[in-house]
Length: 286
Length: 168
Image 1 (cartoon, rainbow over the protein chains, first blue to last red):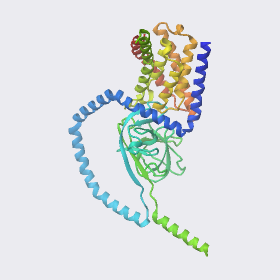
Image 2 (image 1 turned 180 degrees about the vertical axis):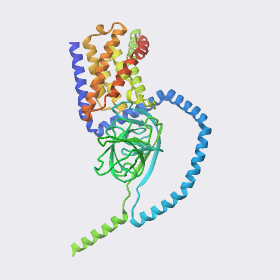
Image 3 (image 1 turned 90 degrees about the vertical axis):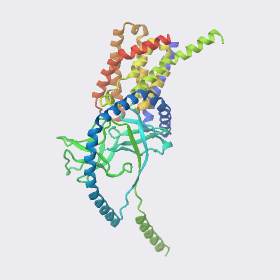
Image 4 (image 1 turned 60 degrees about the vertical axis):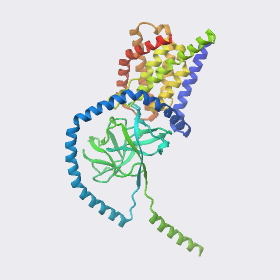
């Protein structure tokens, strides 16, 4: 009888797991909240367990930095001199760009840095590519915010708790990011497939990609601001598959920035449209 | 406090040790190691934990606890909810079906049975996740995970064996 009871309990939990797999797929608000609450509870525990590894890593980084500080300094001086020479040309181009945008009445979106966060957990799985960061709704993080670092884009927020959030990495199989080729401006979709390189979808047949082509965000979709570094074409196969090497080293992430991108509103155009509507309305009254 | 009450309390505290050891193994699985290879072939440490306790102390690893461990792992890893709980409960039922006495033999025999289980576990994971995402997923990573899990088995069971002495 006891054996039967145990088997019945096991059968119940197997059915419950299958039900969760099926119904959890829809990512209902309730399931998302439960997920968020549970991983939020475990964040402090993970941080405590991670402390020895983090401390060792920081210490080894410190020693490494000390060892290379002289060569780094030389390199940075040379880079600084080069950047200074580029600054003048860049400022001039920026002014020209702004003037032309004003002429065409183009409005840029606004990018706001919400917070800088530390990565506290990694899915470490060949099938799921996501990370937990130690910032959440308390810091202003919302679902859909972009996650970046100084090298380029990393992913987007898919689940938020008060003190933590889950980031879907750009190489996850569920990740789709609107991007463009920097040189030609062709808009395509960047798709993850759980590997360390990404693939390009919806490349127009008449367009050609070359190894080394730079890929930037297109700004479509409203998650990532336009013109952020995504990566470079690393391979174009015989069957026409284009592989992209991300600009960001996804295996060496420690700190990230969460940013919010707000697509520009067009007050001038709306005003004009409103005036037109108003005129139509008046005509109607007449 | 009577002696019987004191014993009950100590039994209660001991009974949660296996659960916490497996939770600790889950946390070890989700730490950001920042190593290219590890992120793709992280061994199934929780499987080792659940297998070990189900063989040697099944009274402390009831099916409800195994289910909870699976759900917790799915939440912390970001995997589909129900995936790990389903697989761990199935593994535990397989162990119970074989019978404890069958598995409670020498280490090498136990390891051999575990090799069979981890191959099944990995294959089922790959099949379910492929069906879930409706994509034929690359299986190279799962082969690495299986091999590394087999390699980690002696170390983890040695650690759990020492913990078991506290529980016994």
